[in-house]
Length: 452
Ligand SMILES: Cc1cc2nc3c(=O)[nH]c(=O)nc-3n(C[C@H](O)[C@H](O)[C@H](O)COP(=O)(O)OP(=O)(O)OC[C@H]3O[C@@H](n4cnc5c(N)ncnc54)[C@H](O)[C@@H]3O)c2cc1C
Ligand SMILES: NC(=O)c1ccc[n+]([C@@H]2O[C@H](COP(=O)([O-])OP(=O)(O)OC[C@H]3O[C@@H](n4cnc5c(N)ncnc54)[C@H](OP(=O)(O)O)[C@@H]3O)[C@@H](O)[C@H]2O)c1
Image 1 (tube, rainbow, N blue to C red):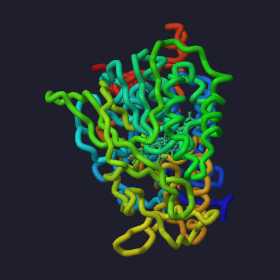
Image 2 (spheres, protein in one colour):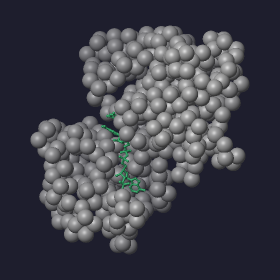
Image 3 (tube, helix red, strand yellow):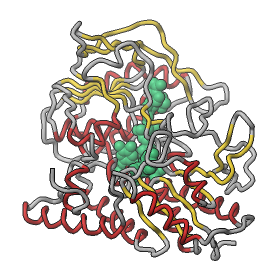
């Protein structure tokens, strides 16, 4: 079947998963409509990866530009799919697309349901990351974080937020809260090396002294955990601020306390202990009832993302898009098929990949692989389907439909033009990079809307 996909396919979402899925399908003959909410393609590779990783981001952009050059890929930027969006999945089916691959990432934010989460100064990392990476409309919103920042979670996103607070904003204090111990951190040495010089090592020592016996009781090697954190020392970047950076282990957030005028002033945390999981796979944390208060100007949740609950696909009990438990087209035992939990059947022709299939899992390379695997599952499905009408006509019908919208869509040629315009501005301003920070500015630069 592959090599001769005589069908039209809609890929929704042009992050790494959608781009590489589209590439796989297009190379094998499919006419692919690649529909993306943002004007620019790239998803979190453009708007998630830390803003000053220019080399990595430019390398990825080059790969993405190459993908999009495939004449079988038809890019529609600035177009959202969903319940209350420009298009619904049902509309795409009605237009005649033979199959749909949903690669919209995990656009929802995960919270803990704690009292005080709605206070001013309480943020989800996603909003801040989109802000400093200039994704409209987050780019033009204000996110004051004050001088004392408390972060929940100890993954790489925590280190990105700590990096921003320490190296860009030069705040006085960053405290990162881990519900488990030092052996359960999820960040990498490379990311830690960027802020290692700000780590409060005396405090870290006392954290290890406090956790050591407990860690040993659950079979964890405290010294190995310490060695891992210190492995970042050798390649540590010089500090650029006096920020005091602390890692605080075995604490779980209980409530966020306000000043009576709606603004956060403290986070209450509860001490935890570690228990081995029943399945033998690692540890879990259990609250001990003893609480303490951390004075803070802001609280940032870095505990992962979840899919957009309003997108219009059924959700499973974990809040993920439901997947068929008995897939007809599994790839390496993974199900890519969207599932209707009411009828207990796969949703015909709708597939999931990337962070839309499994939220917050892995790096760009993982999303790329997952996108291609999802495309392969979809291609197997298409192998059993007839084509009608001709695929190109379906793409033209989509174009016609979108032209009748008041919001302009952006093509791949226009993205190339936008890149040239932004690069020219960067050169003129002697900046390493320049990005328009509103959709209006991008559309105006492309002459797709009249100047306001
Ligand atoms: C803060 C942060 C930093 C990271 N840093 C790194 C790093 O340094 N290195 C690394 O390798 N990985 C990094 N990652 C991980 C990497 O970004 C992800 O693995 C990858 O981007 C996921 O790809 P995806 O295509 O599944 O989703 P996304 O990248 O989220 O792409 C989703 C796409 O779908 C579009 N979309 C969303 N909703 C809709 C809709 N309703 N209709 C149409 N289109 C829609 C969006 O516009 C977006 O283009 C980071 C992740 C985060 C959160
Ligand atoms: N530079 C990079 O390469 C880079 C940068 C950013 C992101 N990424 C990637 O993007 C993915 C997502 O990263 P992430 O940091 O969002 O997720 P992550 O690596 O899964 O880390 C999430 C953190 O939140 C904690 N957490 C989760 N639920 C919690 C709860 N209910 N209460 C308290 N704490 C909770 C986790 O603790 P537990 O372990 O106890 O659950 C963990 O410390 C990862 O694959 C990451 O590597 C990469």
